[in-house]
Image (cartoon, rainbow, N blue to C red; front, side, top):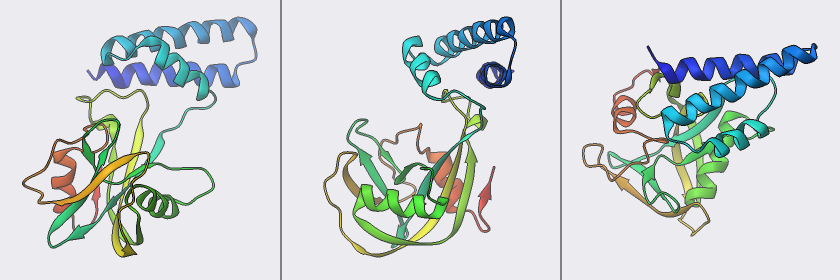
Length: 198
């Protein structure tokens, strides 16, 4: 049994009950259920309860999966990765999708902000569902959209998120930020024709 997926489902039901519920006593019950689910997720994922409560308070309302966009950029059979300033680990360039932009526009924006490169999106490389990965507990469910991109121009500029960029052989990878990119995902993406779908 995937306990994390079950706890997140309970949390989503509680949030939806709080959002749609009209009876004050039902809302109290849903809020209690929400707090219990957060405690279970905190315990299972080793995340501080106060941190999860803060995230949940900012993300109230009807619950749906979140979207993460990433770029697959190849050069001489090597893949472009970025090193996070906070984690000191590597990942595909990208991040959370922002409202008001399409998935493709979000990807182009994220690549430029993190790498200084102007890219064009030429296709879909793969789609991942983080709920299929119980090995790396995450508070929310994410759909990770990985777009195949080609570099138009540009060069790396120091920024608040990324300390460096580099191309790596798929079989000789650096220390990866596993919440963002895993070796298994990169292997699946490298072999995906047509796009890898999860």
